Amino acid sequence: MRVLFVPLHAGGLPHTAPLIALQRMCAREGVESAFLLPREWHRIRQAAEIDVLPVDYQNTLRSELEAYRRYRPDIVVDDCSVTTRGAVQIWELPRIALVRTGAFEGYVPRNPAHTHSLAINLRRQDVAFNQLANLKPIERVADFFTASRYVVPAIMTIEPLPPAVRDRSAYLYAGPLLLDDDVIARIVQAAAGDVSRAALDAFCERHRDRPRVFMTFGNVATPTPEILECGRRLLQRGIAVISTFDIDGLDPATRDAYHRARFLPMHAVCGRVDVMVHQCGSATYQYGLAQRVPTITIGSQRFDREDVAVRLEALGVSRHLRHPDEEPDFVNAFMTLMDRQLADADRVERLARLAALEREMDDTRAAFAFVDALRAVAASARRPARREAARPAAVGRR
Image (cartoon, rainbow, N blue to C red; front, side, top):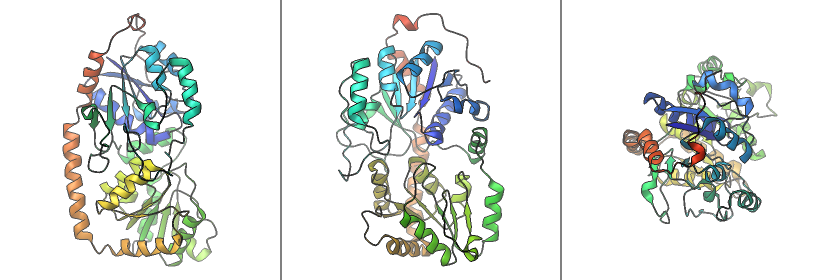
C-alpha cells in the first residue's frame, strides 16, 4: 500500500506537521508513503525524515495529477488541500481528509457574519472544479473535503461534530497531532528559518522575577493596532513579552523586556510563561492546553477558530475576547482579562478541567488506529485500470 500525503499548498508547518505525525504512524508499521510539496519545501525531506516526490506542487490539479501518475498511490491523505477533491475523483482514488471545526459536514457557524480562515472563493472554485471533474456544486467549505474517512486532530469535547453529520463513524478523532520542539526546529531550519531555544531560555532566565506573557498570531495573520497597543501596555507595566510579531514604538526602558522571534519552540515557550495570548489556530490552542498555561484567545472573525475559542471558554480552560472591531473598548477589556489570568484565582478548578481533557486526549490517542483505517479504506476502494500499471521504484530522500 502506498500513501500520498498532501498538505494545504500555502499552509506551511501548521498543515504539514500533522501529516508528518501520521506518516510516522505509517513508518512504524512498514507502510510506504511520500509527500507532495511545493518545490521550496522539498528541502525539509531529511530533517522531517520523509520521502518527497520530485514534483513541484503548485496548488493545481495538473501538478497533483502528475504526482499520482508518477507515484501511483493507493490512497491520498490531505490536510485542507483544495485540489485533492477533484484529483481523487479524476484518478478514482480513496481519500482521507484532515478536518477541523468549520469543515465538518453540515457545520453552521456560531456567527453568520464570520468567514472561514481559508478564505476560499467558493463561487470561483465551484466553476473551476465542475468544469474539470463534474463534481457536485461547492456550497460551503466542507464540500472541498468530501472523503471516505476523516481524521480530526483534536478531541470530541473541544471540537464536537454537528448534529447534521450523517455518518459519525466516518470521523476518526486522533487527539492533538503535535511534533516535538526539536523536530519542528530541524524542519524550520531546513526550510531556511530558525528556532532559537537558547535565546528564549536566556530571555526567560533574565526576566524570571517578573510576569511573562506570550503573544502569537502565527506567521500569516497581521496583528491589529489594538493588539500592538496591548503589547506596549504590558511592557509599560513591567511585564515581559514574547511574541511572533513586531511591536513597534517601544522606548529603550521597555525594549529589554521584549523578545520577538518568528518561530519559537512552542512547548518550551508555553511552559515558561504565565499567560498565553493567541487566535486559536488548531495546533496553537493545543500547545497551551498541553502546558496548562492560562490563556486569552482573541477573536479573528474566522468561525473555524473563533467557535473553538468560545468552546474553550465554555469549558472553563480559557478566556475569550472578541475581535477589536466587535469589542468597543478592546484594549481596556484586554488588560482586565490579563489581570484575571495573571492572578489565576481559579487555578485549582482550571487544572481539574484540564486534567479531564488530558484524560480524554490519552484515551483518544490510544483508540486512534490510523493504519487500520488506511488499510480498510484502501481495501474497499475500486482499483481502476490506470492504477494497475507497473509502478515506479519507491521515492528516496534526496
